[in-house]
Image (cartoon, rainbow, N blue to C red):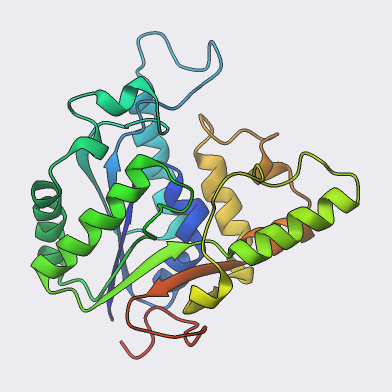
Length: 260
């Protein structure tokens, strides 16, 4: 049995990016640990969604724990930083924002968990945080430094297949679906040539969707994630993509825990 620690910026990131890998690892008998840098304080909810006196972060912590149960997570930890919000917003300047945190201090917090768990594998994000979010970029830097401090042997960068996303968006536009996919000016994921691991999680798609539904404050039933027809959802989320530093070129791995 090995231990997988998966490190994310906000509640709900885990199920979208790594939900299949997490459940697959748990079902194979491995220990899965989820670490979240912030409690998602800057998320948005409709008026009246929260109970009287309830803070958004409280709801999002509860949602994370519910999603973790769906994904087979054995331990959930929050590092205690504040959601920094999207790039260029005032929340970036909050003194407790994760994006402003001292990398060494934050890495030490994560490293303590890695050491305690004797982690074999750590997932972080790519160097652009997938799509440029300040907290996601900080996960990349903090995660790599924590792995160095803890001596964690395998680190994978969770990312997206930019070539596939662009091709699917172009095909959707040709069908007249002009609102499909990310804005054309948004730099998202990495080119397929830079990816080194592709994990088929097709059999875990119902689990991923169930974990997404647990994050009801952020992922509504009519959201992009939950409103996609099954075939399109499988195309978008049936493979989870990663980069392992020093591996490649080309995709050479299909299991982050192979051999452990």
